[in-house]
Image (tube, rainbow, N blue to C red; front, side, top):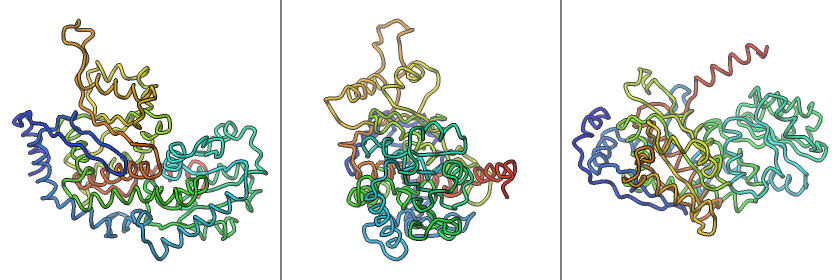
Length: 447
């Protein structure tokens, strides 16, 4: 059995649909409106068992070398385990110590330099959990002087501290922007978060201001490592550990429940849309301002991980891999691209995400848009008023907290990994990105 067999069976499936719901760490998932045929779900489980998806995920979790092109294991799971030791424990202790030092110094602004996984994760977590986040932190993402000129207007650099977040400590955009902003004049107030501490020290940052993390942590999975230092600085050790706990609970749920896991159901949904229905995009719509950029975080996570056309054995993939991930802030998007969702000719894999709060208009909008998408318009209306019936999954958070945000991010990570195993691709390298970096250095004159 393979995905082609499942696609061939689609017309034979009955209209008995999966009526699954689940709750994990304050995140409530409702799959009922996806209308996934029960027979497809059963066949998908058999396919996953044949491919030993659970055993493969367990091996990744335990440290098997699965990033075969780089000869590496995947270790971000280790940072969210409740009992850690060795280098991981040392990294966490250093993170907490430096966070306390920065917090007690009372800087007016923390200027954070990072890009990719070193920026999208910290930015989303900061927006979701830290009140007035951008009054306290300025995140510099790239090399265009217009960005940091705009963002740092009115900021007194003498009363700020600087954090350089770069796994390799050779990221061109990150070091270039740091040097242009500071002229390397504030190294006593500069901190580094990196998997290459020796390079940071050689650069001029004092070893006491450097916190390391493991080289086997991929950038898009690095929020569990000390890359999440802004969370620790602004909310303290307890909130940081609650965030990690939320992620760890998701690992345990998948390892325990296997093919009945909520995360596995999400993978089933993605495969159903991508490989059976042929839908080319997944749209994530968030109905809370604090969650407004979750789609940007998920976009990098999924498209950088699974944007591959070569399988784990180096052969051209015989099936479609990851869909295009896009989305936006729901209340704003309703007045932007929702018209196409309702009446356009394309179809989509839709996720609606919100925090439950009956007193807020944005939650009422979430409920109203959900009903409108899954029920459509009154059939007695004129044709130009008719809307498409859409499949969607709704995600409702009991509250936006370190634990629930950690859980939400880990759910998306783990379903992304499961998808890669179904497609038999390597989710942990990004050679296309590396080519772009290499040619950029050539044109910029960097060696």
